[in-house]
Image (cartoon, rainbow, N blue to C red; front, side, top):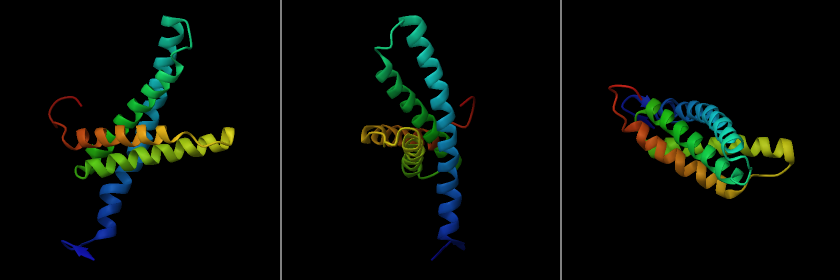
Length: 134
């Protein structure tokens, strides 16, 4: 099937798959950075690991959102789909790491958290203002 002289597969690879992969990589970097910041804040400021679960959820939210935002900014359209795909790819990497290290899959809540935050980031990335920083 051709759309405006371009093959549909080319369109999907160029505007959906590649931005989602790049967004998942950027989201992983942001997740690691957020994990370093929140673990330092929890350990040094609070002095307890009681908030470990909350900080892990915040790390995934930040990584999913910024990964989806990067994917939406790269694709410039279909931010909802591109952001959700970014979150799903991030979960796939997380699941592969969980299986390799502990032999277990991460919970379905993590998938939902990553897909929803990636979707929100994808919409923000598509609708971002190109002037200024960000």
